[in-house]
Image (cartoon, rainbow, N blue to C red; front, side, top):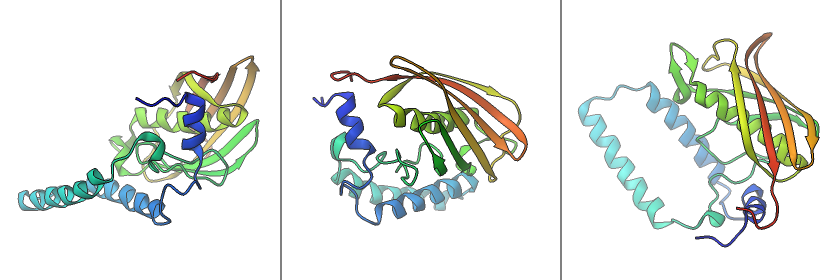
Length: 205
């Protein structure tokens, strides 16, 4: 168990230049994202499945030998500033165009790994993209955690196309930060989200 509180861990994890990752690590994650998309598109034969499993086993030998505590992991770190990228593969990669205390403007492209069915992005991934975008905006106001996130799906969110995300801070009430967001395919609103973020206090996990 870690003795670092939520604020301390957030400060550690949001740094993208603390030297915990090699310069090649972001490139490795880009390769991994590409692999996941390729894997999602593939229908390998039995011998190819066995070959893939052997390759994964070889990779696991390397990564298992390098396991460290959360505060020392490059995976999942970074991503608070407008120019920072979150080193993560479980959520879509945001391309932030502008970020102020009141508004975030970004774009996102959902790859095949995030496919739901019939060319549409999985709804849970749309929610994850909103949590990432709206959370980044709220965290710029104060370090916080997601308290609630409500997503309304307006139209199909397509796979493989550049989409826009717009997020704005609605109001701040004490430790509460209310944020609204839209996911746009040109002039079509694919989804909207409303979220509440709560400012972390010292000592809270």
